[in-house]
Length: 159
Image 1 (cartoon, rainbow, N blue to C red):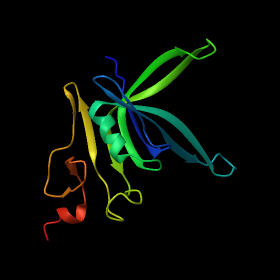
Image 2 (image 1 turned 90 degrees about the horizontal axis):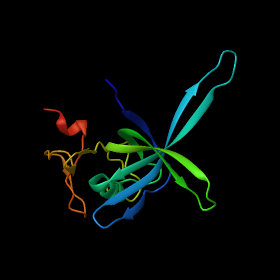
Image 3 (image 1 turned 180 degrees about the vertical axis):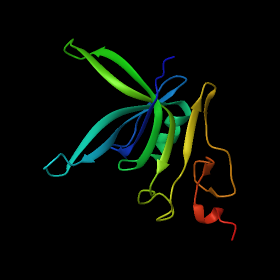
Image 4 (image 1 turned 60 degrees about the vertical axis):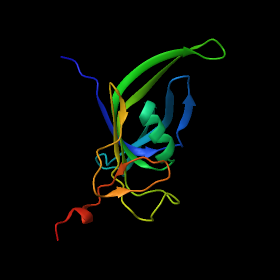
């Protein structure tokens, strides 16, 4: 059995770049993940890795509307390897994470609704396209008409 699955949690490096095609839409952005460790007898070291993320269809639309530089997100997807020829005719290779699920984490960036409200919005792709999570009583309103489920634990308490 073989398996191609990647799970990353990090911060978005730039606003998503959106490309529209005849019957499709693609969002591309970078994601930084960091690991901090202390080698024996040394000072604390932080190592940051940059990942190229690609989202298609519904996830691309949602990325365009809700993901901004600095957003903390979780991405589940699969590794894709491709090559292309640059302007000088040199063969270039690229590794991308093709997103199947994007979960917004942390706090909303400034100017994105109520200040300090936690996000827990997750979007998942499937073979039939992309869909937003099921509706719940704790919906947030937005201008795009999207149904966004927030997971604010204070609203879930029975008392």
